[in-house]
Each structure stands twice: as C-alpha cells, then as structure tokens.
Image (cartoon, rainbow, N blue to C red; front, side, top):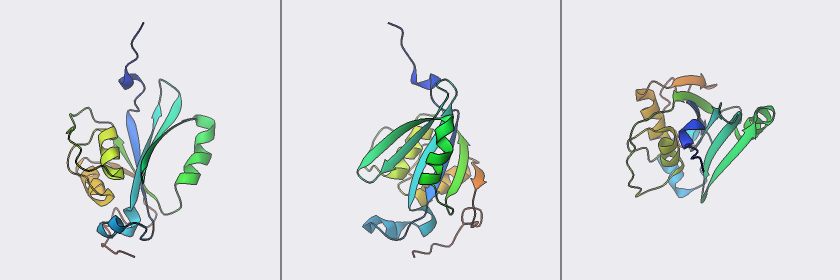
Length: 151
C-alpha cells in the first residue's frame, strides 16, 4: 500500500479570517470586537479543492469544497466586516503541549505558527510579525492596530 503524505494536500498559502461578533461568551472580553473568532482556509492543488478549518466553540469543523462551490461558502462564513490575512504555510516545529485549545491555537497549529496565540487578537499580532499580507480589511482595524474596544 502506498502512503499518502499530508503535506501533498496541504495548502502552501493560508487565508486566516478574523470574524467580528458582539460579546457572546465570557472569554470574548479578552479580544476586540473585530477578532472574536478566527478560522482558516487554503487551496490544495493536489486535490483541486479548498480546505476550511473552523474551530467552532466545542467542535472543530474540517470542510473540503470544490472550486465552484467555494465562493458561495465563503460568503456564508465571512460577512462584510471580516479581516482576511494571507500567510505562507510554515514548516516550523510547533509546540505540542496543549494546555488550552481555542480557535486561535488550532489555526496557529494548522498554519505552522508557533508561539502563544491564545486569542485571535494575539494571533493577529503574531501574523504581523510573520509578515502576513492583508487581503481584506474593510474597516482598517488590522492595519491601524485597532483600539481595544469591547463593544
């Protein structure tokens, strides 16, 4: 039996999507409104499909979509205020200890970013240090280093 390596299907570029939302959970007080949730998607050339990782509250969703369906799916997951950053997938070793698992720690591990990204806001700062490209920031919250409003 031939072994299929995960890296063959892993996207080389990831899009990290920061989703705004009002206060919903107790831990939302630790992040600004513009980045209370985060998920990631990337295109896999080997499978000719889009891979979406959405670590929702209580369950991580892994979804695979063909090109034709993806625009419609992205519109469902990403509203007009979402911030999207693009970063090349990293091959670095990521710390394996998982004391806390949040949406941002799952996304950080998937894209290969090490560090202590417990909240989406910290992940956004970490991505800035890794020279992530801004693909979409309609309200300039990422580019202007948004004030920490907790509305």
